[in-house]
Image (cartoon, rainbow, N blue to C red; front, side, top):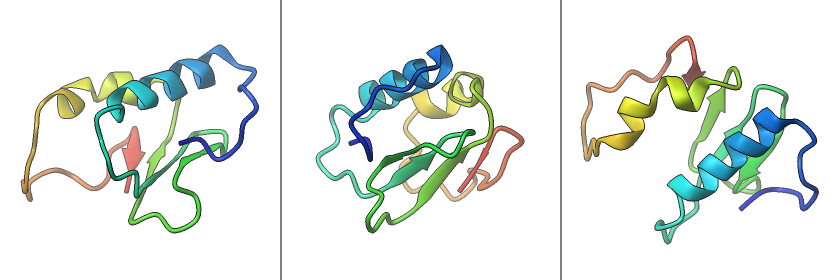
Length: 86
């Protein structure tokens, strides 16, 4: 689901991309993109329904509670945080 085929050079980028791949492994519809703190775009870069922007290398780790619990249809999730925004 990455937008290019070269492996990132930094450990933080590799770790984040691996985590994104693991988080999305069971999804059949990859209709979103993730922009990393350095501008790397991962996911559906052509026509994403939304883009999640990670502001720093620890943003996924800092929000693991949000990522580990299903929030189906929940309207009380913030769309912006100091770690990321939609």
